[in-house]
Length: 130
Image (cartoon, rainbow, N blue to C red; front, side):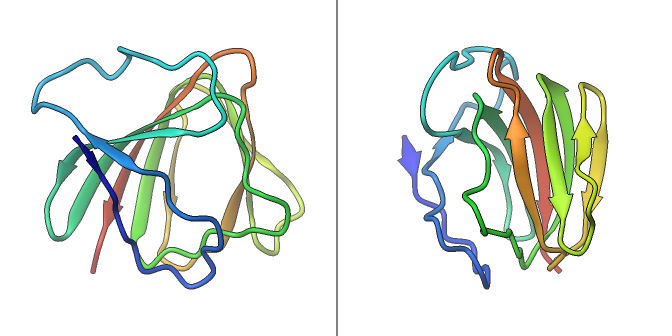
């Protein structure tokens, strides 16, 4: 089942990708997309205040000039692959490798500069309202 998710974000120009709901028990690494133009976001667990997602990226990045500005706090861990994140006002790109995690406060403007083009980048993201 594919479920469209609407998150109230102030500067979210591109539409959010569709989310796929999965059974309550599965494996975070299967099946993994190897190619594709869109990230695959799977809702693993959702309540009114918490949403846990598996995100599989295959070389995607934020569009030029686009910044995420989320109403929710996000905690993310990179499980495989690699990625570069930039926060508004910072000149350096934060490079994430497997095992690295990061707390992103609500409204901390950030963007994905790159994800590994040669292998799936698998993220586990926890979004917390309130």
